[in-house]
Length: 405
Image (tube, rainbow, N blue to C red; front, side):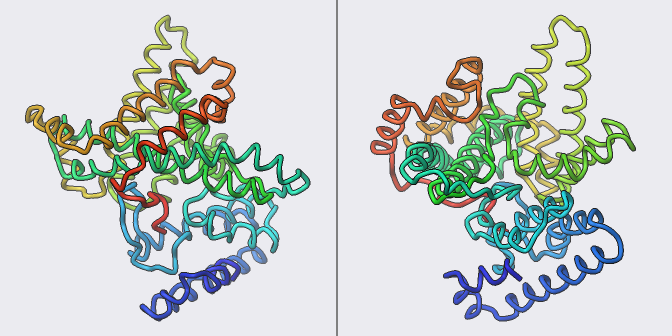
């Protein structure tokens, strides 16, 4: 009820009601059904089954075509009134499983800013005991960093979206690399916007990204990527099932559940199995005594990120199978990059530069805490503001890759 009340009070409500009343009624019906089932399970069984029902409710709406799959490409939701449904249900599933779900919590996680692009509200802690000037001094640099990531690095990279349709191996890999940069800059940028604005207004939410490329293996990478979803998956799936089905079984369940949360499509099923296998192999290498384990883990991480993104990005099964046949058709796709606007190519260089800093200086005192402190220093802020002033152009698309449902 709190979820729909917030949207009724928002600026979107008038558009929703005037465009298609049936979509709104369907949304309200979904809310009533989920509320009824939640109460039924809570009273008759326990908290845990209800949490799984809540978590996978977005999978049901995806299967029925009411919500879009989250590949990272721009897509309009087929049901406007279900915007934010994935983040909302994951939030209350987590809190319910931890026996911490209260009426006040449902109001907190209904914040439209959180529902639009995350993070999943594992917690929303008041920090208004800190004076406003201290909050501004701490969180404003995060806001500047977020604008830089989203507007300067991310938005111009959307120019290369056409490469999604290319099926030869060179084009597919080039797209996967660029798309990885785009997803990182877009999602991280928007997450930092939510983090900084919430902090300035006196509420602390999860820091959804922690310099994921400050990693030497896949396990460290996932500790920094979409941390709020990782927290939900760990509590709901990995911890309770590891003792029952073993480490690999639990890892497969984690990535399979993550795949279903993103959308029930062939590419996500393949992505889940692929990443679970890479994650498990990383664990085996770390526990072995191989002399060159560092190199193996680094190579495995690169393969997992690039080919994982290639699989993740394409929900068109026929086209994805063509890509996975690894046909070589030359380097013609490089010409497309040369024809791109200069600002888009600059964004690629900036993206690689930021990743290189995270990786090569991971032991630096400003970088090792993985909270973007190196970009919040006076020098870092000066350079970022200079880039924002010089490179802000109307190139690319300003959309939230996770803001479709």
